[in-house]
Image 1 (tube, rainbow, N blue to C red):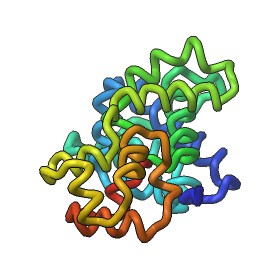
Image 2: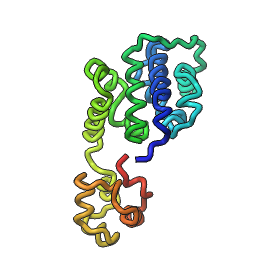
Image 3: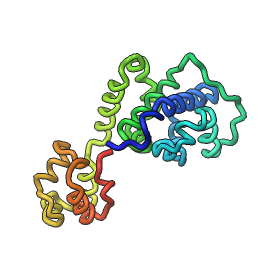
Length: 212
């Protein structure tokens, strides 16, 4: 998997997102779910997940939190920046979330639909002293529970096609389509030409069919 930015920037990105969540939740007294929603709908989430150096290394978490809040329409925050050595559960939530997004390459918008910031915060007592990959596995489980249907199945049903009809039109074997929809075969790792044919018949982009 090709990630948006180098692992060399990961420590910085995690710290910045941790400080951002801590500042928003504790200094600004915002509901973490509300703040995460503000972050997701802003272009800042996109800048972060695509590895814009200004956001994963240049600015500090407090500065980014202020930018998110201001862009949400709540006005300018004049509270001074505060970043503590004693890290809060809110800090850990942002820190862990940054790792999960980087590791899986899932957009923040899709993550937010499956798991709220409040849910991540509740994971702190169990996971904050564990290896980060155990958090990743727990998040993946929540993600799959929310997105029960694959993108291929959802788009195919919306297009009004059966598996057999899609197979005939796209010339992709029906058994292969079944395996994709049952998650027994990873569509992300199949031949690009097959995804292209499926996308052409379903009227969507190739990337819309991938599971990210």
